[in-house]
Image (cartoon, rainbow, N blue to C red; front, side):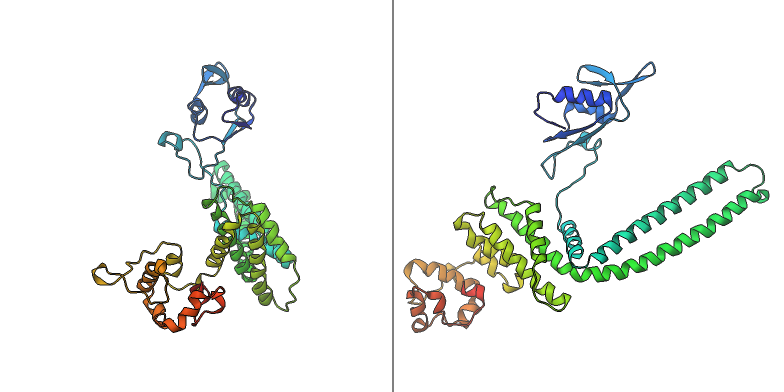
Length: 366
């Protein structure tokens, strides 16, 4: 492996080409012009030897040479000529991929025999497919090498008959394996909601980097929290009850683990972000958008005039009240917020969350 700005970069490339090594190029932003002949395999013959030009040097080409380019950019901007020469493989974590990984971890912990059966079944299916491909290859070779009249070639006919019988048996085994796999997947899928919650949680944590680049938490640390949640004894009698308790347990662990790594001012934001991501049904239409400033309300009635605020609203908050009334008129009406006598105590209380004079959801109270 060699980094893009390593002073030994050219030397390492030359050695890898000459001796047929696998070259791992780290922190590359694209395909260096010097590497184009290697990617295109611009080979020249010098007698019995194959040569390639790298920079200003002509060197022997080894057929075992391989080149892998690594970048931290998930969407590298490659020019068309470079894109045609490389195969792009994205190793970034995806929601569905992480969900499958966490599902495997969950089943391995809760019912390891299911995971073992799944792995064994996959091995058998793969072995059957390889055997079937070998039979087809052998059959084609036998037909190609046959001489004379095929109908009078007794060994060939016997071989064809045996191949047909074996192929039919393998096909039946594959169908039986597919049916068993469906039944096994049905049992495995009972744990999928917890794995899906875990995947959602990880990506909520990953989004914190948009607030501060320092807020980075590795997948390994998250997986450790996930496994620790599975290790806890929750005193349940069924799989459904255990899964129902596992998700809140994992949420609680992640909340405090991540919160300890944040600045104090950002911890309330993280808590609300987690609740919104994991409990979207707890928010009515446009509530989260209004809270985060994504919803723009006109703040008044026709003619551009602001709706009047009741007397209990302080002068510096009257504009905010008018915007709230414009965005959620039904909420303002249902809470009777025009009633000064009812809301005056709330406005002047040092513990206003305990003196809320109406019935509303938790987020509406906030």
